[in-house]
Length: 247
Image (cartoon, rainbow, N blue to C red):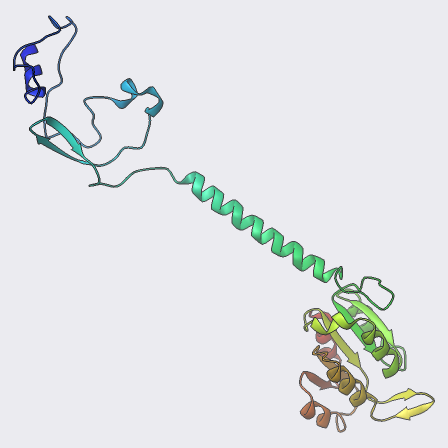
């Protein structure tokens, strides 16, 4: 039985059947060579030879036999390895990016980057309400639940505020809107073009936020809607409510 050693050493300087190290240990039993190993079996358990590799992923391989004995032909199967850690890392990274994006959006809405003429932070979303009279109480009160509302009685007051906060022009309709009436008392005179004047000045200052003209007659409002983009005219209180609450 010990003579089988010669099979592994046939290309060495040791003659087949000769053992230069004396008699084999009594407990020694050479493994049976076979090309029909069951998948996953191993006549030489790697954990016994290299304890640190015990439990390592199994490599599916083709068993072949050459003149040096039985070897495993690598690269013929798939490595079965747990990817739970990789999945967790990817999930953690995705959650972190999502959180950072949410925080950034929250900061923008908090107005940390938008300052007024006095250097004070402007809360967002922002609704500028321009009306020479006190706004309709129910609608005005409701709008405050959804946005930071600032009331101005004249076009001049509203424009002065906008000029003092040039960064407002970077805001879209989800962060800033303007609600106004069409005819206002300004400078002691009834201004029938107040609605158009405000829209015109806002657009000249590159303010692209949506503007709603809420009034009792759209006759003089329709031409404004045709001339300027993102201008809505309405006499409907329900539409006005949607505009001031649906940021």
